Image (cartoon, rainbow, N blue to C red; front, top):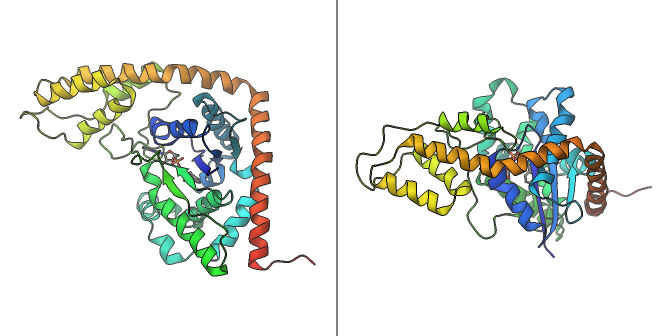
Amino acid sequence: METVLSGIRSTGNLHLGNYFGAVKNFVKMQNEYNCFFFIADYHSLTTHPKPEDLHNNVKKVLAEYLAAGLDPEKSTIYIQSDVPEIPELYLLLNMNAYIGELERTTTFKEKIRTQPDNVNAGLLTYPVLMAADIIIHKANKVPVGKDQEQNLEMARKFAKRFNHMYNVDCFPEPSAFNFGKQLVKIPGLDGSGKMGKSEGNGIYLIDEPKVIRKKVMKAKTDSGPTQENQSKPEAIENLFTLMKVVSTNDTYEYFDEKYNKCEIRYGDLKKQLAEDIIKFNTPMREKIIDTLKNEEYLRKVANLGAQKARESASKTVKEVREIIGFKSF
Ligand code: TYM
């Protein structure tokens, strides 16, 4: 059976981008594959979270995974920092990762631009840690959104390089996966390309109805189409993209037709979109709140996950150490 692995950084609650880009697929995959889903708390350190927030952030994502339908009996659900074999593999992979290729990654270049005061080495080697996360379980498939495509390419490169360097067939080449469809990119409603935690434009699964209404009503629009069937500018397309994932087909088509006939009223579209997001979120929101209260259950899930993940990870690290030439006296 093929192995699937994916993760989410614990820098805050899950937003609709995380859900539709990744988590929705996790839930579908756990019935068909050998699955590992984890919470990337080491990755969250690149932005220097306060010590008093770190554990709560992890707990929130764990509760959200469970509320979304991940089943700890079917998949291995764990916290990255519970598996010390991951930083060990990260260190080993770093020896064959080159500064030039790391500096050229789009996300690193973007970070230099957006946070010039905190361009740390963890950011530079972020894709190496991600590769370690993936190949430590010899994963074949990685369900991710479009924004992670380049990181996946790097993971493939590091896996191939290791195999080639030692002339072994240790790691499969992992590929980004979305059930054969194109990778998804959920936009922000502020006219920017992507909904994201760092972008500050997220609609979160945990958001209350009044917060959702406020965020959606504030979404950027324009003065409306002037010609029939004209193409939609980015901010409008973004509203429609979100509608496509949360609303029914009929609703989407109704507003699409109104747009094409130049009869659209953005206020109506936004009201409908907000109500559809609320309808989608509400059951999940209630479950998240319930799950968060159940500390005992969260502890059990995390401990079981750590045990299963370490079993798999330590096998790989043992094999890698032997390949590299480490021997015990
Ligand atoms: P993170 O936490 O930014 O995002 C988690 C997952 O959500 C997807 N995603 C989106 N998909 C579509 N549209 C969006 N607007 C959107 N925003 C986020 C991401 O593609 C991702 O699948 N580095 C990773 C975490 C990570 C990881 C890994 C993932 C660490 N190690 C190994 C896969 C495999 C990250 O920061 O994702």
